[in-house]
Amino acid sequence: QVQLVESGGGLVQAGGSLRLSCAASGNIFSINAMGWYRQAPGNQRELVATITHGGSTNYADSVKGRFTISSDNARNPVYLQMNSLKPEDTAVYYCAARANSISWNSWGQGTQVTVSS
Image: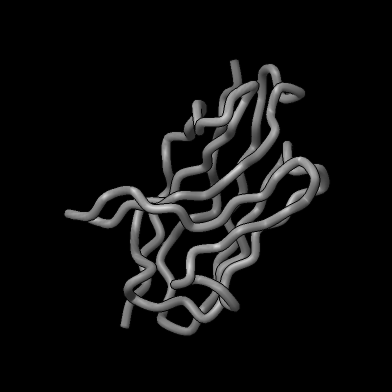
């Protein structure tokens, strides 16, 4: 099993930056990809960015050019650098992992990001 803990959320003004971190523990060598999702009140959880063990990245159109996902080896830790933040980026951000699976089967507890206008 894999356990994930996020950190780095907070309150920032529009146009500002935040960096989220996700630390994995447990059977980290089973991880083949890591990702960030977010969920705003009243909305479904949506994909923000992913990174595979091979280093391939993928981004939601809404964050391309503003957010960057990175990791030394796509396992631990994984970061999400968020620049040029907008009020619509306000959400709870969740770290996720694919561990011995093609589906996202490990989740963190979430960290709140609030962007004020």
